[in-house]
View 1: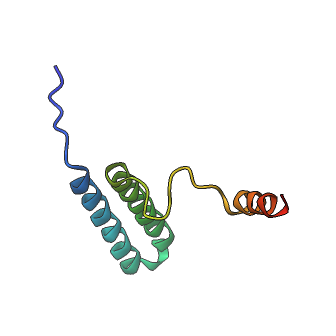
View 2: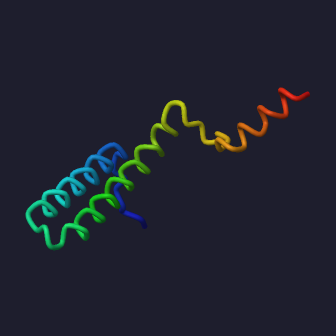
Length: 82
């Protein structure tokens, strides 16, 4: 029997962002280890974005099937030359 309680993804993303903020504060307090704290902050913030995107989908203007810029330029050139 699984007694795991599912949390709201927005709450989880908020929690991850707060952990990122704490890491940034630690980086300011401990300059000799700031590289470590800033990388931890980036990791938590990336996780928050991933959780947020699972709820909202990709950001506006960033469809998941979006072509890369070079591929898009190639297809535009082919269309113009035809």
